[in-house]
Structure formats: structure tokens, C-alpha cells
Amino acid sequence: MHYELVLSKYYEEGSALLDLLLTHSEMVARKAIAVADSANLNINRDFIFNAAMLHDIGIFKCNAPGIYCYGEEPYIRHGIIGGEVLRKEGLDEAYARVCERHTGAGLTAKEIAETGLPLPHLNLLPESLEEKLICYADKFFSKSGDPKEEKSLDRVRKSMAKFGIDSLNRFDVLHAIFTSR
Image (tube, helix red, strand yellow):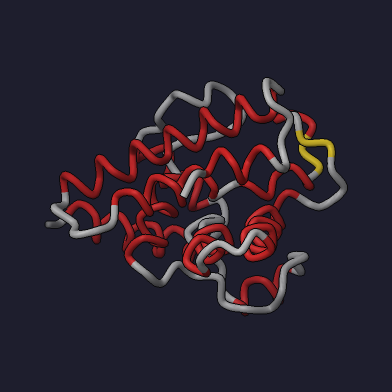
């Protein structure tokens, strides 16, 4: 699978948005593979790399001018949009699920409904080891600011805490999964 072929259908070559997306995604991919290596995970590294490179494909339809996104959708929908795009492209369902389940430390249907997020009222929690790994690695990098700067664990935890204790607890579970082996 060549993630570049998929991205080239939705992003203009040489654009600031594509450059940012590729930088962020590569940092997430490297982190995910490094975590997998340190935890001795038996995973498909090609899948992890390609899924990490595609996990944010949906941002092109979102409104986030600070990161060169001039679409109309709320940014929180980028994972759902990405899942739709990858299904339309005929990619394996596992890629779409990574897109949909990487936001925060995952989102529950209850959280979505209670907070009025513009998302389907579904559990969007990472379930497979690969989904969890990319979700976890993604938390250490931001597309705003320096996309190559890795956040400290403390900074990630503070960020997760802003979304409530349940979000922080889910992140802590992910952290324990990948650091306790």
C-alpha cells in the first residue's frame, strides 16, 4: 500500500498543508514503531507506518486555518471524515478504524452525546492493538507549533486532563499497555 497515492488525491503537492500533514504523520509513525519495538510488540510494522501516515487524512475538509485547513467541517470530525475517505478508496477497514478512533484517547458514545460533539453517537474507542498504538503515539505530537517537537508525558497527560478524568484515565491505560512490558 502506498499512502502517497491516496494522499495525492486529496492534497496539493508541495502545499503547506500536505507538508504539515506528512511531518506530523511521520513523527507519529516513528513514535508508534519505536514504542512497538521497546514493548516487543508482535505487530505488522508496514500497517502501522501506513496507518499512521493516513490517520489524519480527513483534515483537508476541516476548518482549522491555523494549520492550513480551510474546509467547512469542525476539526473534531477529521477522524470520521478520514474513515469515510479511506473506505471510499477501498482500503482495508482497519485503516478507516484507525482514523475514527485516534481522537483524544478515544471517545465514548456517552461523551459524544453529552457534550454535543458533531459526531455519530458511537463508541469511537481504539480497540485493536494497532488502533491503540497509533492513538497513543499521536498524543505526543501536535500540528500546531513545531510538529517535530515531542511532548513530554506530563504535557500529554495535562492535555488529556483538559477533556476530563475519563479521557486522562484512558490515556493512562494506553501508556501502561505500552510501557509495562
